[in-house]
Each structure stands twice: as structure tokens, then as C-alpha cells.
Length: 275
Image 1 (cartoon, rainbow, N blue to C red):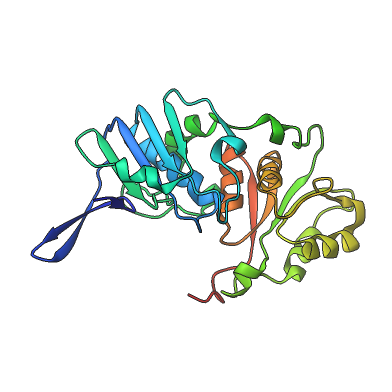
Image 2: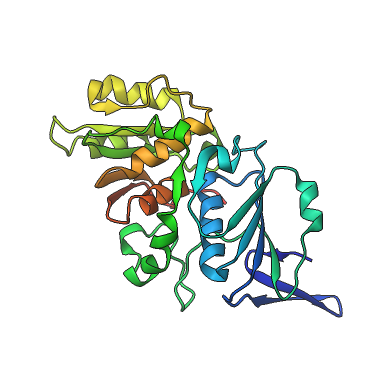
């Protein structure tokens, strides 16, 4: 039996009863990420597992054939003081189990919570420092690989700008009008630069047409490349101020990687979202 989303599920006379998992020391933690789970939610799930269980070893089923099209160790270097094993074949998970010293979790939770149970997801600068204190040490140990470090911009002052608009979000009415981002950019002085992380070339073209060379983007960016996406992630993190799309855990991850000091402006709301 696996654990689903931090809850233990027991069957008693055919009735499923959920028991909330209590953070405790567990030597071996196994994480099974869904193929549709994006990079932000995967990293948040990993960080929660580290913080909750202080393991000696983590094994991950990291599907690199779906939304995330690259392996974990192709994208990140780990400086953690425990072992991380990556598996890209789900057959390996059949060996994983649950016992006193081992836990297997399907779709590990990406949501940070207070002790009172309040979700801190996408709260950015409103997250209590007491929560940040629990996580800041482990985020410092997550580094980009050398291939991605070559794409990181240095010695350039800019405002981070992420526009998450894309066909997958359009289906749920989550895309925000590009005019809302333009109005926010126009609040800044004409000599302000913006590092753009966009999901589509169309979005990039609109903003570059409007703001010319004030929009900075990866040179020859491949919008389907996970390597360029992670370079975007660390470039977004490398600023003191940011304009981010509402509801995107990708830019939420950038905020955590920025040492939690980024001043964030959010464009949009959940009002028009379809469930």
C-alpha cells in the first residue's frame, strides 16, 4: 500500500479512513511523481519530504516522458547530506514498501502548511518567517547543473517577469490578458529592464514589440526545452523584484530560490478559473 498525498489510508470493513501523517524521522522515503506534475510541484513535494522526514535516503520515480521532459539530475545538482536515487522506469516502484523505517508516497504534497493546517501555497511575501526558517537551508542545497549555469545571466539588473499563458491553461480559463502585464510594466521607469520567462513565442513577440530591448530573454530560447525552462527559473530567482502570473508554482519556486526577499506583484486571480 502506498501513501497518497501525506495521508495514510486504512481499510476497515471496506471503509477508507484517512489519517494525517505526523512528521517524524524516517530513514528511507520513496516519492512517486505523476507524469502530469510540473517542475514546481515536484520540487515542493521533494522539499516537504526532506523537511517532514529528515531521511537518510530518498528514492524518486521521476517521469521524464511527460510534462517534465528531462531527468532530475540533468537539471539539478544536489548538495544534500543524504542520498537521492532517481528512477525513470516505474517498474522500480514495485519494490518500494511501507514499514517502520520506509515510506512510499504517491503524488507527494506540494503545499506548505502552518501547524494550524493553513495552506501557504502561493502566499509569497506573506509566508511567516518561522516557516521559511524550516526550509531555507534545504533550498540552498538545490543547484542548477553546469549546462544550465551557462545560461544564467550575471551582472544585469532587471525585474523578473513570468507570463504563464499557454494552451494548457487556456482550457481552464487560467490565462490572464497580456494587457494586464503591459499595464504593470508601464508603471516602471523607461530605463527598467525585464527578464521574461514566457511559455510561448507569441507572448514574447507581443512584449518585445511593445518594449523593445527592455525585454531580456534567453538567447535562441527553445520554448519546449526543459533545460531552458530551468535556466528561466534561476534567472527569475536572480532579482529583487518580480511580476508573476497568478497560480503558477513555477514562479513560486523561483521565489523560494531567490532567498525569499523578492518583492512580488501577482497578475490575475482565481475568479474566472474553471474547475
